Amino acid sequence: MAGALKNVTDADFDEVVLNSDKPVLVDFWAAWCGPCRQIAPSLEAIAAEHGEKIEIVKLNIDENPGTAAKYGVMSIPTLNVYQGGEVVKTIVGAKPKAAIERDLDPFIGQ
Image 1 (cartoon, rainbow, N blue to C red):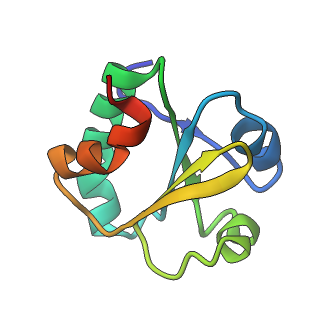
Image 2: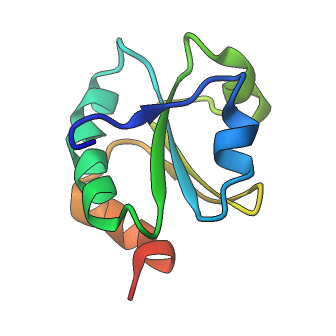
């Protein structure tokens, strides 16, 4: 599945994200958001390298405003890590891959 992260929607968010048995990073993004496009290759690389420990999915806030509103996403890109149905980490803004991996270390660390 290299190069394509799974998209989630308001309709399947609970099933895919909240009910997952491993941590799920949700990339809240929009097509018009430059920084969102900038971090997409980093997220795809992290998913490829650490997919057994953390799932990474994308949620388009223009197409799925309900979930974004529910979690108070005000600026994008926002990366929320969900574990056990709860937000356990929030990363706001575009960062280099190494910085994102440092933020995710509690979930993908050895």
